[in-house]
Image (tube, rainbow, N blue to C red; front, top):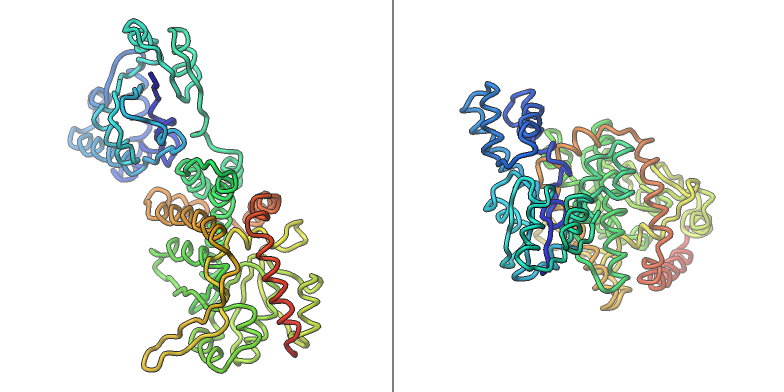
Length: 486
């Protein structure tokens, strides 16, 4: 018979530890000291069977008002429901008739509710006790019933040592523990970003295809954290600058624009952000319709954001349209970069670039991997067509450089960003991002992102999945740009 631990094996908390739940309750109660009292009440009951009701009875004995405790208990259960996330690698393995064994103070029916919230739809047997695993009592009962158990759990003593001591076989799982990347993020001050990355990692499906697995992991652990840190930095800069609108360049910034919009949704002085249909070719060979489109989008107070670039094609558009907004490039290619030199020999003669960037090639990183992590299934923007009678323009898109297989891989990566967007609706995670991560300075952003970026640069899956098609298309665009007069 297969058996599974519940907490940190099948499901996890977004806040990692139960203490985070108690702190959330304290905040919502407006009662300083509640979290510490809640921890101490539970500690007092260790070593004997107890439930959540017993813990709150202990709190009452310490003199806390009954009406406040009634509300606190409700808030605690609500916070548990808000915080639950599936550990898909194990949850998807559970089948009808399997056994779930949990040492917890929470009621059995509430544990089932948490599991259903996480997506478990199987009919399982649940054994709940306060210390049945730790004491060995549950393993002894299973052995005496003649059941040969194969158990998976996260606790070395309760789930492995005690299970084996009583005749079961056991495997430990450390998947719920923060990964080395998540630990790095926490250490650099980006706790909220780390919690989002952890939740995404735990929510990922285990893929038989190693390429899909690596692409999903890179999105969860590398690209989404980089985009979140960038969005938080932009949030700081917009507050410092006199910006009236942010234009996020298609296609590379489609995920960044979405995450930025969600991160700033509740800001009292929120600046409008929009998805700007653009490309190097559209900017350099801008038609009258395209220049009119840009003039309607931008003013000198706007901020144009791109993931990577030299800034030269934007400078060309600014010159030709007569509007020069600010420019932000996450990764800026300086004047010595080979691409910048090639542009200046073609369309960019005499152009000056005034762009802010966080990262560049001097930090030992390239631009290819991050572009591949943010690829789009739709083709490059070639121009726009204004619609008469409507304040709108329709983009004209080139054929995509990617085939069905590559498009399926892109869809997998997009699904991770979809999950990240869902997590940004979570009150607890948004609080962590806004009150902690958002205060990190630019240097912390650079220091934190570079090692993550290097992981993407070393990815064989990225280059094998998209590199050939991307480089071939990029060469075609470079040839076209080089043939455009300055």
